[in-house]
Amino acid sequence: MIKVIASDMDGTLLGEDHKLAPRTAEAIRRACRAGIRFIVATGRDFKEAVQELEETGITCDYILLSGAEVRNPQQQIVNTLQIDMELCRKTYDMLKEYPVSVTFMTGQFDYSIGNPEKLEEDLLQSLQEYFHGMDPTEIMKTEMYRSIRKNSRRVRDFQELDEKNVPVYKIYVFGKEPEQLQKIEMRLEKNRRLVAASSAADNLEITDVRAQKGPVLKAYIESLGYTMDEVMVFGDSMNDYSMLSMDFGATIAMGNSEPEIIAAAKYLTKSNEEYGVAYAVEEMLKNIPAKQ
View 1 (tube, helix red, strand yellow):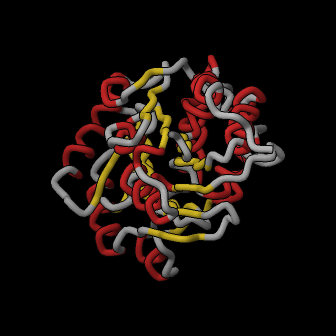
View 2: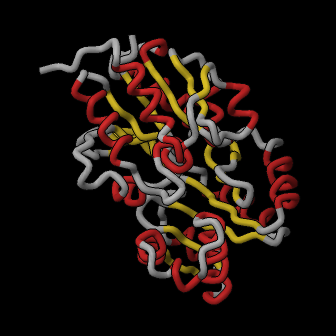
């Protein structure tokens, strides 16, 4: 019997507008009323994740930054997995060889190294991909743009970042040339202390090898007294592969998933635009009475 639902956000729980549809929110609330625990498992940091759930009435646990941070329903941090700072330095030195922008995500602020104008250009270009070619002037009006800008900090070099003594949980790499990102990923595969996965064709998300959604989810649910066969997971992209490829009770790929995700999952639901998460949860709940 399913007692836990864990879902990725972008491309999965959220529509192409990156918002939670009323139907999906209601399906999750019904599951919670039936006694099922809900966990968000996302590459986003806490601020970006929680803003999409505000005013929905949903209480959940959070696996954030691709697995580098875990928070309980009271939004308290219960575990973190940061990247060793010297390893960050060596990784950044390698990344400088490629035409990519690099952001160091610390959970509190996102730090970038470089020219302010170039960083702004890269941000707008990455969000154009995120919002499927939206005009930059319209992007700058979005809540996501305002949130990212408010959360962004620029440093002159890596030494300044090191001197701030902040934990780096994830290195986010954005690039306009997919073949360059593939070369970076191949080089990173040689380092057993790091793992890289993409949530879109134009990015790589680099974390400590222990900070992957699947293993982190397994450890967390077991610490709460659940077993793997009691867990249903949803995902769509390669940063969800570690969840969808593990032997959880029900691993469900979205209809808009990458082929590798569909191949790894046990089941396939409708796309995020067709409310695939809501559909699968509704079908499951037909056999589970709501708690009074």
